Structures are given as structure tokens and as C-alpha cells.
Amino acid sequence: MTDPQQYEQFRAALLARHEHPVTARIATLGDVAMLAGLGMIPVRRLRATAFLVVGFGLALANVAHLFQPGTLLPENKAIMEHPLWAARAEAHRVRLAFARRTHLG
Image (cartoon, rainbow, N blue to C red; front, top):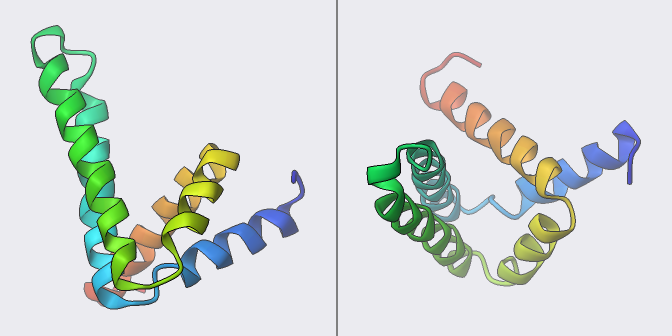
């Protein structure tokens, strides 16, 4: 999977797995926690806390998919197969949600 059309299909499938409002909100909180934890890793004294925060975010992201049945395994499979595409698509999803919520988009 390398062409732009295949990425668009990947992104559309990811967006479809976040249609339930509770799933979308909790997954966004998980994404923010993971990002915060990743940002803490370079600070040596915060490293242990950083891994806990990343783990908490990962747990939140997985719990989110329990509100939209049938999406937990496909979501994790997609992330494992294409981690960079998944990160890019998740960032797009969060930006869309923020734009809708703040009436910017």
C-alpha cells in the first residue's frame, strides 16, 4: 500500500471506526495522553511516568472502541500494519473534530 488512493481508503476506514461520538471522544483523549507521554520520554526523570501515561492513553484508545462494536480488532490491526498511516489519519481525525467543535471547518 503506497499510493495516495490506498491511504485515502485507509483513512476513510479509520474515520468509520470512530463514528460513535463516545468512541471518537475517548479515542481523542487517548491520543492526547499518548502524545503527552511521548513528549515526556526525553526527560530522564519523567521517563517512568511517561511510559505510564502512554500506557494509559493506549488503554483509553482501546476502551473507546468498546462503544462501537466490531472496531477494536480492525483498529489495532490497522495500527500494527501501517503505524505511520495510522498516526497521520488519527491526527486528521482529531483536527476534523476540533474544527467542527470550534466552528472553524
